[in-house]
Amino acid sequence: MMSTDKLHFGKITLLVTHYNRSKSLERLLSTFAATNCTFFEIVVSDDGSKPEHVAYIKSLQDKYDFKLVTAPKNSGLGNNINKGQDAVKSEYTLYVQEDFIPLPGFEKPIADGLRILEEDKAADTVRFYSYLNYTNLKPFRDGFSEMVFDPWSKNLDKWPLYSDHPHLRRSNFFDKFGRYAEGKNPEKTEFDMMISYLQHKGKGYLYNDYKSVFDQINTSSEPSTMNNERKSWRKGEGYWLDVARVIYRQVLFNYSLFFKKYKY
Image 1 (cartoon, rainbow, N blue to C red):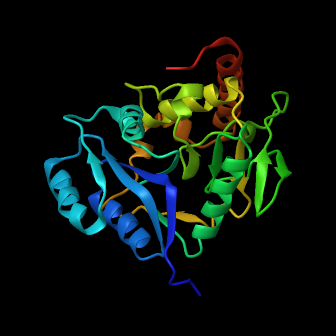
Image 2 (image 1 turned 60 degrees about the horizontal axis):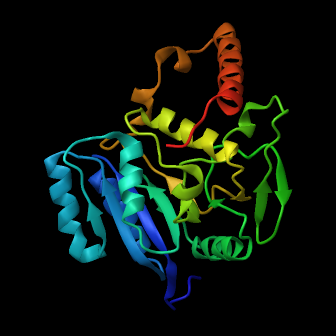
């Protein structure tokens, strides 16, 4: 049973990025509001949504008490995260996109993750969600494992040591890894930060039960926008397409890591 005592994360700002999914944002904020925790502040960064969505978000401000950072036009995920992070004033940032919700009991993993960052000064991020388990994990404590990058492994799942999925990070994240790439599609923006994270020796932890802290919800009225960003050949099926994708990703990832510079 959830405690009725309020748990205040006074060192953490909840940063939520949003674009044209105001009902999803409301669902996220209402779910947090129904729990027993509060934050230093909540920042909602909007990426130039349609006027009706912006108006609806503004109608939610009094109820959920958040700072809204707007944009005159849609400038992409990189710009949206950058300006949102710029508005954060606390030592730590919990980054969550608007199509997620916290699950019952999420407070403990976040509290434990915060302690990890406070005690391990070399750590940069603590992740709470993933599509797949990371390939090389070193068990740590409190249900967390350190993600260890092996540059010689042929497993493609080794690469996302960094992910845009819900995670806790130091708010000076840009000092070490640079800002998010702007003017690119969301997938490329995340890819560039992933490579920068690896190039600058990022250290991260993953919660072992990574589907138990947050859930991702996309509805027919507010579906995911990511599928529209992916090239058709990368979504196709077939043996030779699968082979081509593996070769392409191996060459691209390794070339990017060892020969390109990512820090915007």
